[in-house]
Image (tube, rainbow, N blue to C red):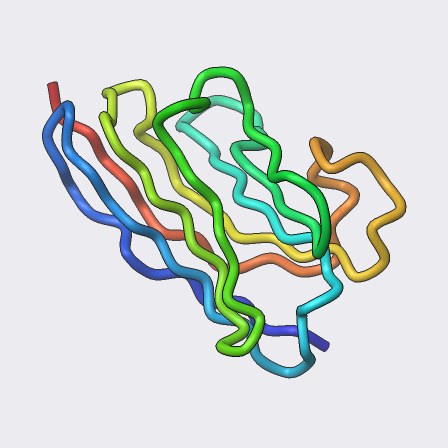
Length: 124
């Protein structure tokens, strides 16, 4: 079993930056596929960024060039650096972990473990 705890969400102005963290405990996550999703009110949960233990990270088009996902396997922590934030980035951000890496990175149903979420609000 893996427990995921997100932190770092806040209220920020347009153009500002935030760094989200996701601390994992229970198992080593070095070989897990890790990802960030977000869910705005009245919308479905959507993929934001993902990273495997090898290869390049993946991003949804709307955040490319602004967000950076990274992981520290020693600390079992996933990060999301968010720059040039826009009001449309407002959502609850969730950390997710996929133990086996066999499904689509973009689908929430692929992931085995989820954090409780952290609120990001970008004011205009």
